[in-house]
Length: 184
Image (tube, rainbow, N blue to C red; front, side):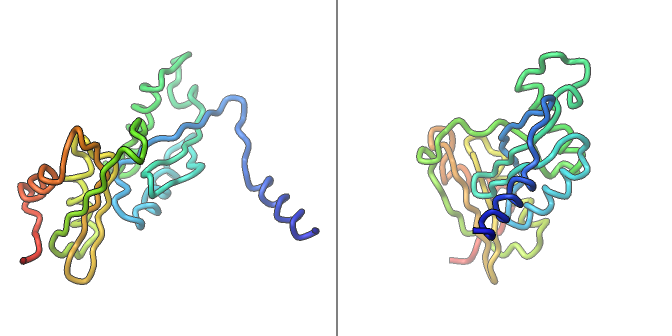
């Protein structure tokens, strides 16, 4: 019983409550191309004043951010959600050397997305993987994408809105960007 009470006390002490002037929002983070990019995002957000990362869901590509809208947009008495997203995006772009973007989360439920997998050639460095992600992850209709690399090949996974794009369009974009494909 003492053990459970201690755990509950530690949990409640670790959770920082919102102040009256703070708010939170869940946002899509473009740039979470691989699990190791989570640390890059955390590091970038630590340099953004008055914005804290409350939660990160890599599988959804979303983050829960906490901020004071009055500090985020001084002089704007009633900032719109779009104005908040634009300001958060500007701050994160600058903090991450333009490798992360903030957008509104997808309005499509996960069960309405189609997952496609594309095998590509070896992507042996973080920069190469991010470049491939940049081709696919920012395409219209791509809600989420990841890029991984194994010993001799890489894999691009994309969760797409099938009404806006498809496997062939993604493959064509990768070919156009001169991404290597494995020999058949």
